[in-house]
Image 1 (cartoon, helix red, strand yellow):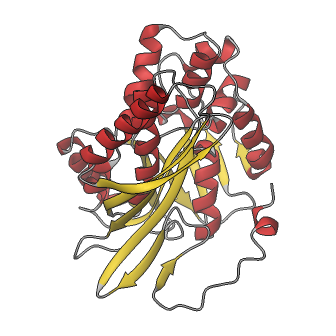
Image 2 (tube, rainbow, N blue to C red):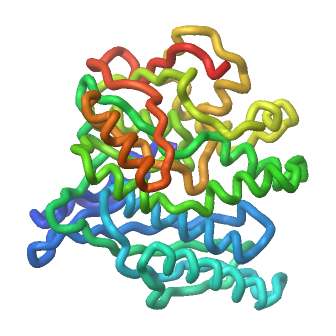
Length: 326
């Protein structure tokens, strides 16, 4: 899909208070000496349990706020619900899961809107604020020499597809649910302790799609080191069992031509790179000398950090991969 074509009728805002708009994870807006942040996101069910789905949907929506270095203040529910085919208890549990996750984030749900739909959909419009002394972290600030840190392993979409296809074991489902339920709150707090040049969260466009977004907006090329890129333990097994999705295929179609693999990789390795993530981790770009400090801050916050690549001068493609996953 050519998003430039789709969005061409939206005029460029003539507002100097708007720091970032279309193309960013969330908008930034200066208001009375504060920087406010606003985002909206929604998803369809990725698990069977309505409470868990609600909590995951809200963790996913909150992620854009955290990627910009902000704290969420309040949120509005956005819900589609098939009232004639699902019991009202499903909706109640879905909302309860969302409420609990937003409270965990230190914010609250202040209202929202629900429509009758053919299948459940849940998300949030979230308003947040950049803490005093911090800055709005954009996607276009990556610099040559930066290191790239990822805070959650890949493979979330593979696991959720396996759940949908009844391929996943109870243990595999538990692993991925825990990953999706985990807020990016602490990872965001950690990256604010260093000079972060750029950040985005890894969600529906997969690792390659989101890295490509930063690379193209920053006018650089990114080298990914697959050997040090983390993934959920049974990702390749589930791929071989057939846990591939339409979203993965769409990402391959959209981004494959923008990647040059320096070594031959297997079909499953390539698929993992394009796997759509729900409530994935943060992708943080910082000056290489600050890597140890960020990894220490992440550890202090109970988070993991994986150095998965570096930023190079702009090349003929936005992304180069080296090594392999195994």
